[in-house]
Image (cartoon, rainbow, N blue to C red):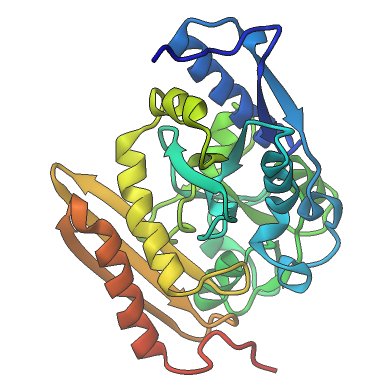
Length: 315
């Protein structure tokens, strides 16, 4: 059966959020598809969809619904056939997709590290006691408070550009951003210090782009197979199984990273109390094909160590 490819007259519709980073990721997806099938860019249309998470930026995510806030409207449009695929930052994605949708295509992963950003300092340890550090991530907040409980953490919602603007305005003296986003936007002029993963373990799936589709769309499935990066998929299978078993959300400080070495997968995971007063971590290695099971086992082990109420906020 011949694959029916999109044309400028009948383009494939790519759904995305409207931030500069989200658009860069959608354009990368379009470029990879166009090159894979020798199609003009006009055979693809990028459709910007505003999500609840983009509309409400003055409150923490945990107060307004968590990760699904960045996907619900996009997924509703896909189920309604208004778009054909959706491009997502994988660290924003819930671990379970709505009925009728599937997330099984990943682009090559970018730098997974966090970056420390401060106009006046190049290292977190140099910040004076009481310095305001901005972040909307519970993981980063907890990791920061575990290392520097003497600092003040302030809420820092918004896209990458908005957070840099808040930094310039003095809302905080420092913040954290993902190296992947800075690299994808070629923001080489932003003064940054990458934080190695043994110092600050990143969010599960940080640096990865995922492409979601309708389960029954065989044409799109065949097209996406041509641009899927197998190593990224293998790493995310372990990390997202870890997150799923922990029932992780934007309300739980969780970090995880899988790395490949030949036929072996190395997985590290961390869970923290929201106030940073306690952190539990583990590491294991296994054959690549056992990555998802390793993620589940590690999560179960950490949950048993943590006990009830570990993720509850303390007054």
